Image 1 (tube, rainbow, N blue to C red):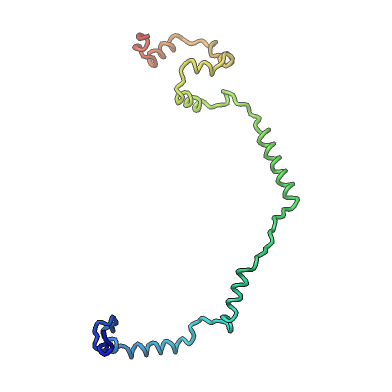
Image 2 (image 1 turned 90 degrees about the horizontal axis):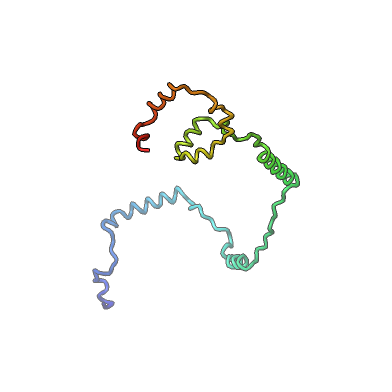
Length: 165
């Protein structure tokens, strides 16, 4: 495009919004009122700040920061207290278990649930019970009546199981 035809160009790429000049006066007055209410924008740069800015940045970038490493200082009584606490813990865990674990100290419900849950066969159960346990409780010495044995066989034992063996 030639210079003499430039003022006739409608496709310059710049367009003015619709009704821009109708609202221009009002927007300028609103901006002036706002500037009157807020005289300062709130940001202040110190005097001669940019004069020495390059030097201060260079000094901070090239200086070696030598900071001291501080060690944690613990008082001597803390060492003594920690050793005493360790000794107390060791003695209470070592010597506090004076109770002997025996079959008589286990309640019946937990023993029954263990036997049922573990699916032990008779030979495995026989290894758990010693002869001294049986004679100590005098299970073998008690006389059981024939009627009690008959009632037990009728109610608990299936005859088909006995015939198959």
